[in-house]
Length: 88
Image (cartoon, rainbow, N blue to C red; front, side):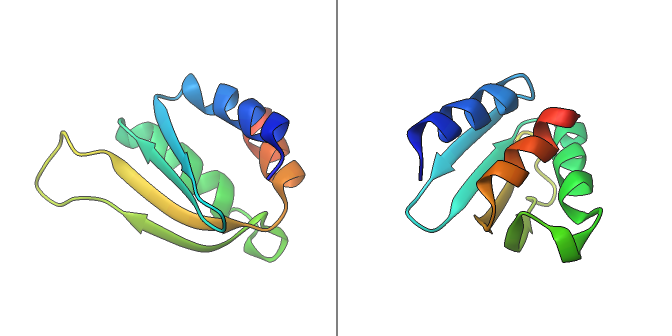
């Protein structure tokens, strides 16, 4: 994946307290605050037929408020994904 695009995505997400972990085919985002996790989930789920991601898995730990909210997914369109997050 293009390093410039990853840096731009990282900059957009850092104000949301998000840790980003990019693997070859998978992206993992970890949000500290529940409201930031909900912000991300709402953006991605608004129009799933035009989504920039696929195979979104949301993992929230039950009973432990200090655990980060984790999302694991594939990005199908990085430019669209950055655009969606940058608009908010």
